[in-house]
Length: 340
Ligand code: KG4
Ligand code: ZN
Picture 1 (cartoon, rainbow, N blue to C red):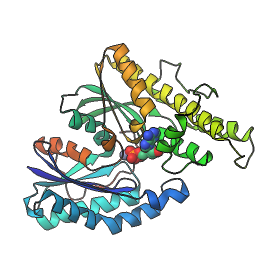
Picture 2 (cartoon, rainbow, N blue to C red; picture 1 turned 90 degrees about the vertical axis):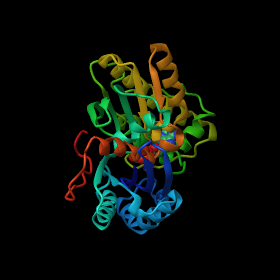
Picture 3 (tube, rainbow, N blue to C red; picture 1 turned 30 degrees about the horizontal axis):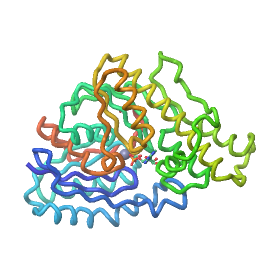
């Protein structure tokens, strides 16, 4: 069995071919970082237009690398939720068109579930049932994952996602986009205790909630020295930037580790899976490893190359296809205003 998976939820145009044995025959990711860099964040209209230009060359290249013909595919899978509406639409239309032209079934992929599924794919081990945490530019959610097609939302951020906070803080510190890797690099030379930033909900064991907007504001005030209405970055020394980055990163990591472990305790599960762009963060990975060791649970973090958006994690579609979860061609996109 061979499935073509498409991923266009945000600002990466990606495709992959995965076999029924979960072998990756090809994987292509066309990043748009260069287009969004000067805006310090993804501009939805620019992202959608870039997907339109790139989706066909990306599919062609993926099929070429896989060494197969389109006719040999058994199904077409596409991430239809959540994401930017204009971006999702491009992948969805491409997938449906291929289904009609080739007379193949359509499989839907939830992008967040796929990020967590990357852990199972990479480890080759059974991970279900587990607590799954997705930490990305758009989401910071916790799930009880019962099976590949059964994810129960437990809680998450009530405002900004962790990755969004990394991107905004990078912008305030004058660091490049995407902010996560840049802040993380700067943090290596900084003192994590130089600034005491808020850790929302961390001491409240009754809530599986996260919040990063107050933290963003606290970093802003620490930079400007007060609540000025307009943000003007003062001259910051390398050490100040490093200290701010390190103190901010530690606050985010404290919250993510704290709530992931709380979910594990509340659900009494022994496995924790973490995926999404922010899961590439070195400090987060080592703190999670430490916490998992102390709690005697099994930890799976997606390998770095599968943390940021890609179509390989769309391998969750193989499980859905096998379970008979085929979609009608009127499948719609769901940008993501619902908890899922
Ligand atoms: O999963 P992803 O590629 O896209 C979404 O679905 O949002 O995640 C992108 C996010 C960006 O906010 C980026 O700054 C963040 O992941 N990120 C990181 C790191 N690498 C990427 N955040 C912290 N540390 C990193 N090393
Ligand atoms: Zn993502």
